[in-house]
Structures are given as C-alpha cells and as structure tokens.
Image (cartoon, rainbow, N blue to C red):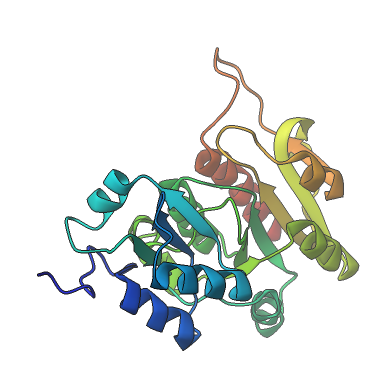
Length: 250
C-alpha cells in the first residue's frame, strides 16, 4: 500500500490523515479537492473544517484526482498548498514606503491560468512594482507552475490574497492610490497619466475585468487592437501597460 502522504509535487498533500493534519496546522491552503460522491468517514470532518476555516472545496471527478495524485492512494481527498508564503496588502504598502516611492500595485481579477500569473509576477518585478493582489476565489494561487513561470521573481515579489477585491480597491483609493482597469473601450494606455500611486487591475483571459470591479476603478485604459483578434493574452497586455507605468516613473 502506498503511503498516503505521497505528493506528486510540492504543492499537493494527499490522503485523509495528511489533509486533516494540514487543516489543523493553520498552514495556508489554496483549496481542498474531494472526489465526487465521497462523503463517508473522515471526509465529513474535513469538509466541516473547511467550512469553519472558509477554505474553498472543489468537487472533482475521481479520475482527475487519480491523475493529479499520480496513482497514489489519495482516499478521495487532496489539498493544494501555495509554493510561496502570502503577504498582506499592508506588507506591499510597506515596501513602497521603505523605497520612498508612490505605491505601484497590480491586481489580478480572476486570472485562472498559472502561466499568465507567473508571467505577470515576473514582469511586475522587472518593472519595479511593489506587490500583486489576487482574490481568494476564482483565481489561481501560488502553485508550482506559477513559481516556475515567474523564473525566480516570486522570491522578490510580495503577493497578497484577499477575500473581497472590491473592498480592497476602496481601501487603496482611500490611500490616494488611483486604480486603473486594463480593459476594452478605455482611453489609450500611452495617453494616460500614471503619476502618483498606481494600482493596475488585469482581468481574466476570457472575460476581462469583472463588471463590479471595473465600476470601482477610477479609469479604464486600453491597448489599440489593429489585427483581426480583439484581445491580448492577459500577461502580455499587463506587461505593456506595466512598462508604460515604469517609464513614467523613471
């Protein structure tokens, strides 16, 4: 019998006892994966702890869970943990203060592709941003693919995970930070004044910035689309605008 603590990567904890101990430890957890229809024995205890700690539970097909666990005896449950420790929004603002710079923050609104988030982190670090903010739900976390794609930038970039992006935006605006949504039908990115405190909101690959989040932003900025496709990869669009922000701050 295979050891239930076997992992197929550094971010996946497998097996009922292992996941229970993880939940009790207080360690940050991205989400818990439970095989569909699995509700017997200690699974109910695991689900109760997840509700208590407000941890996202995803019901997945058992075959998918088998594949993720590389054939290990997962007993119907596994948990994803981050590759890197999360920071707070206050930590990000503290970095700006330490550097004696106006805050430069990136918000990722429902970015679900790990490669995109990793690329955004890499570019943000290169542009001198102070930190990244992501939502707890409907957004990829700091998994091993994100860490790898960032090419080491994650070691130098603070990433905060928040429960309510709209509220966080209001708190940033109260600190005199202007919030810009990167989306369609906005003013040209290269004609926009990005001086002072800046927070750039980048939307999901398919739907862009969510309606509620966009309404909370001060300004919408856009990139001209001269070809036949009507959108850019999220990390590419973010990178272009981030470098314009960086250029104006030099």
